[in-house]
Image (cartoon, rainbow, N blue to C red):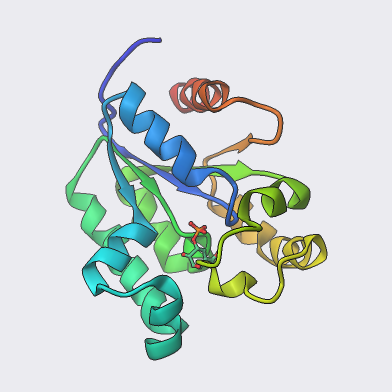
Length: 175
Ligand code: S3P
């Protein structure tokens, strides 16, 4: 595969467990991109876990931190950003991402998602709802906004990480 710098940022969006972090970390290694894991960046800056931020300051506060981080990314390029699963729900965020980025939607079925997130306690929105029906319902509610935000879409169910990245790069080049 050809190595090159991207003169824009790549924003990975999609549901919790869609594979955003895995793909971002692979791209940073194979393509020498800088990587920003939004949740992790926010946790480090706030010195609090995501569930604690939701509990103590509320979800809108967390959502504002996300928007501010996206705006900060406009000063950079060749960064692959693993967005929190809720990022594409705010129209403002989509506008900010598109200013210097391409938005890539990673898709997976509810069954695949459940398999990937079931043992994690870090996702307040799934606390007490760790089942396929709930994931499917939340995914259905979000589908329209995810798809509207996306420049390209990739299914992650039956592909390896390297295949997903190759498909993504092929589609980005064709844009
Ligand atoms: C959220 C997804 C999480 C995290 C927070 C809210 C969401 O990120 O930002 O728990 O609204 O879908 P991941 O998609 O990385 O799990």
